[in-house]
Each structure stands twice: as structure tokens, then as C-alpha cells.
Length: 232
Ligand SMILES: Nc1ncnc2c1ncn2[C@@H]1O[C@H](COP(=O)(O)OP(=O)(O)OP(=O)(O)O)[C@@H](O)[C@H]1O
Image (cartoon, rainbow, N blue to C red; front, side, top):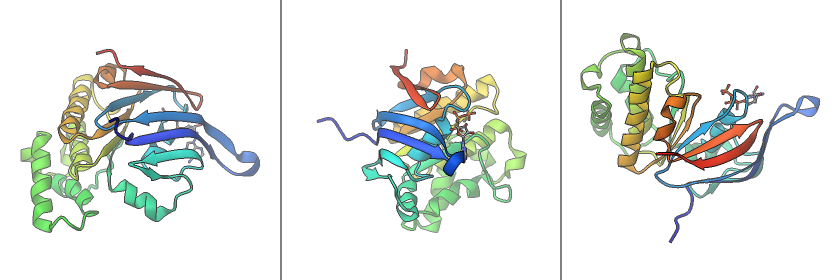
């Protein structure tokens, strides 16, 4: 039996602005993404990659067409439902968005706050273990400004994965990193996500990491131009 896709996108259009300023950004997007897949999305600047990623991440509601995440339809969905879907998603964004007043562990632990079923003690333990898994065991009590770019990105990965989400979305996770660190970070994401059986979608301009993908999606002018199987 073929399982239901984790993300099913059917004929999605998206526009920004109103009236005469309205501008369509996404056109007739169709795609299916399955459990455990690593998908990399590429395309020129302004082609709509981040917009599509934010739709898949339930960070905005889908205007036209059908977009189902974990079986939940997001077309014209209200905030409450979007927030529920977000609990199953880990986000890793370019600027890592760590809170400077919190230590590495506290930053990771923050994403467990959305899960009331996890006790305080458990949360501390899980966050510490996740930091250990990303190689930052001895850096738990450091603040973001005391960490290197690669270390901060590792904290962001730990934060995204600590709640064992079904889906991880990453927007330019290697942008601020040198070649080796970038590669390490992406391989780490891939390894941890495969261990947890979660789906990863990465938006990137970094051609050096394309081989990590099971599938490549290329966007151009708001359209999905090709969906290729990655060359391994
Ligand atoms: N909130 C918004 N309001 C109005 N226009 C927007 C908004 N967000 C994005 N856009 C426009 O939508 C288009 C697609 O942007 P998007 O960020 O999705 O592209 P991208 O492919 O991710 O680009 P990049 O690779 O540079 O990050 C751009 O023309 C951008 O200016």
C-alpha cells in the first residue's frame, strides 16, 4: 500500500498585495512529498521558493488550490488550525533566530514549550541529549554570541528536531557557513532526520549540497519547472 503523502500540493496559486498592486507569485504548483524524503528546492532569487516553503510550513494560509500537510487541508485555514499543524514541523531558517538571552540548551528547550505533555525535567533532558547529538555537549550553557556560525546553526537544528517533528523545513541553512561547515550541517540534518523518519525540505542556492537530496524541485518564475530524482 502506498502511504498518503506527507505534503500534497494540488494546483496552488498565491498572490501578494491587493487590488491593482496584487501580484501573483506562485502558479499552478503541484507536488507530492512522502515520509522520510529529503527534497531540495532550487531556483533563481524571487522565483517563489520561500513563499512555497512558508505555505508548506503552515506559516500562511493557502489562498487557491489544495495544500494538505499531514492530511490537514490548509486552504483558507484559520490561525488555530495552522498553529496545530505547526506543532508537527521543525523550522531552520537562515538567520537561525536564536534568542540571545537564552543559552544553547534553553533555545532548544523552547520548542518543547509547545508540548504540554512533556514535563520540565524531560524537556531539560531531551534538549541536552539533542545538543549532544549535534556535537555540542560541552556547549549547552553557552549563549549564542559565544558560539561560531556553524555551532549556532547546529543549535538551530537541535531546536528543530528535538520535538521529533514529522517535517523539517530549512531555508538556506548553509548560507552563512563555509563549505565544510555547510556540508557538515546538512549531513547532520539528513542523518538525524533519517533516524527519526522525518521529511526534510531544504531551500538552497548552494549547489554543493544537492547530492544530499532524494529529489530536486526546481522553481522558475513562480512555477515548478522540474522534479528530478537526485543523482546519487
Ligand atoms: N510578504 C510579501 N509581500 C509582497 N511580496 C512578497 C512577499 N514575500 C515575497 N514577496 C515577493 O514574492 C516573490 C517571491 O519571493 P520568495 O521570497 O518566495 O522568492 P525566493 O525564490 O525564495 O527568493 P530568494 O532566493 O531570493 O530567497 C518576490 O518577488 C518577492 O518580492
